[in-house]
Length: 173
Image (cartoon, rainbow, N blue to C red; front, side, top):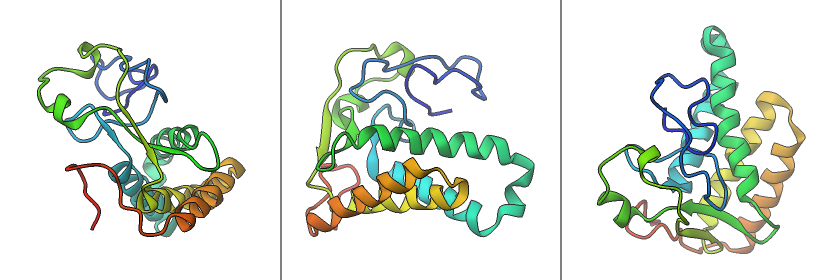
């Protein structure tokens, strides 16, 4: 339900969800919780956790196999698009402070330009996203996930110790 982008309303559990933030630098992905910011650290954690559970316990996911794959690919395809070059990963779109001042649906928030944060810094978000994409490769054998995972892992290794620049939201420690 927290999908973002031009396809947010397609095959959504809630019929009232529609396209939103279609002019983001990288459309797609998921909004964080009730916010309309796309934070990389919790998104990567969510994808990695679900992908890992899918890998470890495939029988549990059989009744929702297609839906689960659709959710995971929506995460992963967005991550791939966010890795715009070997040295850049877009890990946040939107401004948490400004977003907390808006009480409404993402569809009504407008489609103007939203703040973008990139890594480096952000070895943590790059490494966690690499893990999520590696798990996606294990589950679905899609080479784009593996190649992006390797590239993000290399970016994380090249910037070890760089703190996630999510500001007050999901600070690194």
